[in-house]
Amino acid sequence: MNHSNFHVKVLLALLTAAAAAHAQSFHPGRCPQPSVQEDFDVTKYMGTWYEIEKLPAVFERGKCNQATYSLLKNYMSNGKRNTIQGVAKVKDSSKPAILGVSFFKGVADGPYWVLSTDYRSYSLVYSCTDYFLFHVDFAWILARTRVLTEDVMSRLRDTLSSAGVDVNRLAASNQTGCDRNDRPIIGGFMNTLLTAT
Image (cartoon, rainbow, N blue to C red; front, side, top):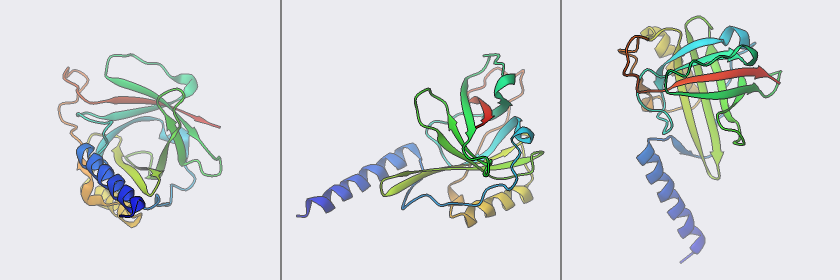
């Protein structure tokens, strides 16, 4: 028996089991390199974005998921919701739509690529990391309100599909009963501070 092939098969089986158990999006090969938003303007991107659809993410559960972005110097937290604070940095000023996001000190930045946004109503975000012979990807369709029209959703799904993302794995996010006065907010509220480097 070839031990090398055996180890690869065991690794593949373990990764497949982990992916199924956590609903992650593991894929063979390296990350795709989709086009990103041209002339991305970090300042226009500030504010609250609601999660409409996403590829499953083990770190993100519940309902009413949203992200509020502000410039680093203007940030204030009220601490009233289940929150996580992160810092996003523009890695290369010639490609401002490709950011690195970090939520924990000492942990490497995760990719946050803005593929498309009109700043007023929708944003399409993609993230992918290579692991040996596989990659894990995440995607989010975000909106300034808790709903998006089907024609915009269809266009954003088409963009993901043309980038090689399996849009059949997208899951709708629950944005019902999420008003500020409603107490049972189970999901996350993420504050991310953006800074250009």
